Image (cartoon, rainbow, N blue to C red; front, side, top):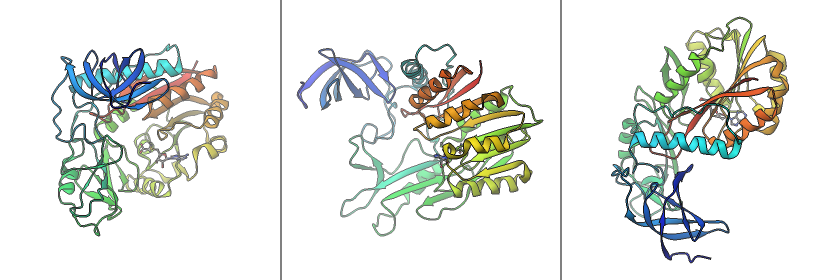
Length: 397
Ligand SMILES: C[S@@+](CC[C@H](N)C(=O)[O-])C[C@H]1O[C@@H](n2cnc3c(N)ncnc32)[C@H](O)[C@@H]1O
């Protein structure tokens, strides 16, 4: 048992998914944030587990040649970013390696390509939303981010990964307790409108491929519009569509951004989403883009509860299932409901913000011999942070 708060020197072997540097103390694995491979680091143990420990760096003894000066003044204090001490090209290489490692560890032997991470054109000031927390000091109320200690609030007057418009809003937030809630979400769009929740909840829009989609401060919308556009372009470029007798199942469809963008490629679109407010924005997008309302159906339900009967009722000859679940991935029952209908499903596209649950779900699909993974494309939706978005394409073996 190592003593918490005692100092050790470790050499970092690699950076694992989640942003942790992996080192060893007497052969026991130790995870350290904000370090780089091959660095010799003085660490202090913060938490001891049976098989591994967590530590914080108290000094870099031998820095890596890849280390760069982090540009943000709150870096390592604020818990939002994890890789600002690495150049952007090196972050992309690291993320590709992490996706490969996670998929190999959970899925097993990988017989499909995992491509290089597709970069964000803007590695800074790219996010169109921010979630702030108000500190609880008696005077001088300020908004900020939960710190690396997972407890304290680090007040900020700017954030280098959120849009410049949101930064203006952060600067002008009142410092009076009565004015704003403890938790505050601010979203912006490319027309520089903003929506607060709680608060104005003004309607925002995004224009992609000449089509508009709508959202507000309460509703999920992809955080990085440039990467969203790249994902859409990538999906549209796949040779998997036939307009005739075809159906696009947009599961976890949100405000319907993928349904709207794919509308020219399919005869019919089915959106399943549990959030009613989101589906109302999808209806607005169908109307405002002058899409044929009859060619869409909306099911305001939980995907795992309704997929089977919705598919049986709505499917056509050619069917593509598009999945975009939250971080926890797919319910096992849903994978088996999709697999049961393999005869009618030509392609499954799976967009995931968590490579671990993606790997688990791909393995579940793969254990049904019908499915074969054609490839995985990581997209850097969240530069400077540990997060990675991946698109997987499954087709029939
Ligand atoms: C990652 S977001 C994707 C939304 C949409 N595809 C987009 O790109 O904007 C996941 C969506 O799934 C919805 N959701 C979460 N769990 C669900 C479930 N079990 N059934 C239906 N929808 C769900 C959330 O409300 C959210 O809109």
